[in-house]
Image (cartoon, rainbow, N blue to C red; front, side, top):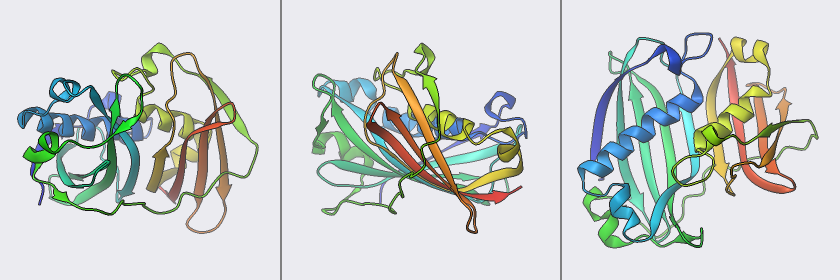
Length: 244
């Protein structure tokens, strides 16, 4: 088993939307902070990884949401680096409320990117050893993400504030573009139940992105999303929804 770390966090008003619930981008920011804390604690923080000429990037999230925490609520955020193979590391996150009830489960896939050529690199054993993760040979694929077939989209420009320390768009920003196209009324009346999102290509400062979407009217209601720069697919997601 991989080592676990749990941190407490009180949900701030600025981390919530107009309904008072934690937003998806802030949800990801909170859990990633916990994984960074664990890496630093184990002596494998960003500076150590950079010695290898590498940096961590996230390639996929699979998220199950029982409920989103609300403003001023105290939660417990737990992370575990579960397993790894030659090219990918698999890390889970959990959010529990004060009654120890699970609110959110996130299964994530990380890879290491070479800072010079921006290509994926293999996972050095010395880097991953302190996490005591299980070494596996198979690559976890996750559920298939169905493509968008409609041509409806909104256009957004990548701002300076969208860029993170890796000089590309922070993963949480993709949710802003994907959710915004659904409209105020829908987002007020619905909450995400599950999300599968995959990040394919980097989006950089100044890019013009198109956020494509379509709904499936079957129950439970779901939406499909793609983020493109021109014809290049950069990210895609399927989201299942429930009414508030």
